[in-house]
Amino acid sequence: MIEHETFIRVRYGETDQMGYCYYGNYAQYYEVGRAELIRSIGLSYKNMELEHGILMPVMSMNIRFVRPALYDENLRIVTSLRKIPDKTMTFYSDIFNEKNEMVNGGYVRLGFILADKTKSLEAPKFLLEKLTPYFETA
Image (cartoon, rainbow, N blue to C red):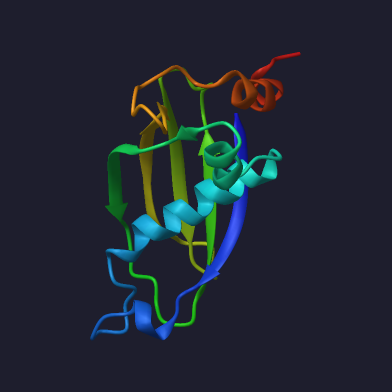
């Protein structure tokens, strides 16, 4: 398993009339977590697209709302991969407030396609090489 933490502050423009983080923003927070996890293993979405021609479209998303995040709170986004990808890659996200209370959690499943053909494929070798050490047992 691989896990990565990143932080994001709830900005004023991300809140609703009640001062709560608007529910639609959580999908973006999940994306921030995914991008930073990928970056932590020495890759980036930009690199995967430009150098390897691989795109990762979202196939499904599940989200649960536990308690509201509030304006100006610094949220901790914990993103993990619990299994090595095959035809899909599932990122799990748990979001915590400054009191370390869970605010939100869920997962996003992505596929792999060739950018020039929009043809689905297995997880690319270069990605598996970066991830495999995190899933090997002693």
